[in-house]
Length: 219
Image (cartoon, rainbow, N blue to C red; front, side, top):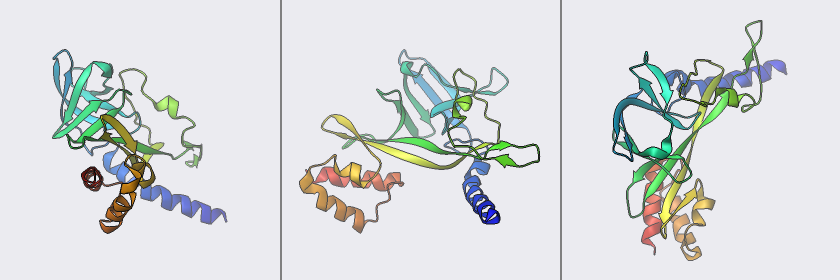
């Protein structure tokens, strides 16, 4: 029985690690990219950026401080952030969202990592499994510095939550049930048919955008 459990954990861990090893650290992008942070007062900073899927904040490389990776704070002062061709805003809930469609309707996406705790090391080269969030606070970034060199925590996947503008307000959804609540009930059958006919996957940003556009066209 123990061997079966160990084998299952090994297979689960191996599947989840492929992405984590590829990135080394749990970031949205495989590598830091050229980015721009634009403040509301007009200040502009061109830096190397990546998005942490653990703290849900942007991290930049401070070339003036030994290339230390630091968290961008005081987000309430930021107008927008760009990473390559991607545009990010800080919404009214102080959440970082990517703008994936600018209008008719506006569509935003929020990224959140699925954190997997490999367990703390024992004195014999093994690990002790613990709940995924048991020690998470000790890894969160309270100040500027973001140091996560431990291999205990890995990202086993990524959740996406969307926001679509409807009647002047941003409505949240992550699945079909939540999406249907945003639009009139009389349109539900047509929306469900569109999802089936197009095999819409709510993990695909492009397919979700197409779904939002179709739902809006029914009005």
